[in-house]
Length: 436
Image (cartoon, rainbow, N blue to C red; front, side, top):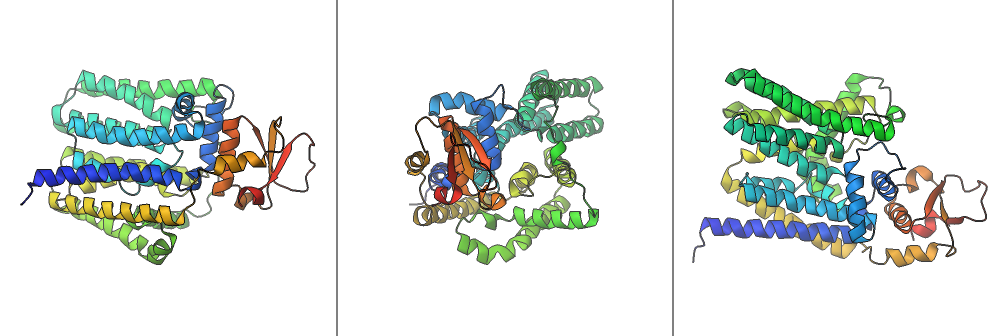
């Protein structure tokens, strides 16, 4: 019996969606928590929201604080927010009939999927940004609308409150709509209303941030760096960007990934060639132009940030720009290839799931182990003693131990030199005991 195509599509969609959710959950359980230094800052701010000041936007730690009342702690709250963000994107796409098969592909695969298992703000940012993309698509197709313009003003407020990178999205959107208004000879007042409301949304949040911590974008002075050679910098950033674009990075089996890593730059280059080919061969519509333009503008903003500040040169940061590039590529892919791509992603999810179960340690016993390390029941300050601070401070178990201490209400002290004076009332724990 031949099953009709739409039933095959529904089955693949359901399998991919449910498989992705299962993988996210298992990745969290078998992962040493996937906690980073930025995650620790979010947890600390969520724990003491009105007094602990960070350089990050406020919405994500505020939501962690709210969800922690339900989950019992900041760690689980962050994972719950990110999982719900993924579900919300797919559900929104399905309910609005907004490129559902393509959306499912983009958000269920590299480079976005790995971020849903972390304790970082990107998943929430993707959700808000995706809704913005939807409203912009509707404005392009249906013309200016007061309702959608007001919605965009509110959404840009929320986007910047999640990540300051939302400012680059705002700038690229306004420049695009200036071009769109000019080409289509729309009334200037519609564009000015859009500019006014979206700029008001962005500015209002930045003022809130200023009154909260004294800076529009947080204190960035300690991140400032001086680059010696712009040519060398561009070469390195473009090379790393091609590697980070490669879907080979989705493989979590370290042995397989290391053997295939030499292909990363070529796979990334192949993706860019594919995008360029589509741009040359196809007559681009306005939404295509918007996606490509936004990719270029946001990526330029990321390059500027890399050149002037000390931030991670990672796929995580570049995913904010690559979202637009991948949407453009997938939206212009033939439907028969989309189904093949779904099968490929499901296969990768199965391989990664088996890898997790076989080779990774579950975090279920961490709480009991970490509790046994605490010296006394009345301890208030826990001092982590490092042998090699720069290396050990980002080790997964050390990060997870910090998350545990924050949830339990301990004050963390980091002793970078084991020979430093010790306060007898504090609990001192060496990193080798944590990492055993």
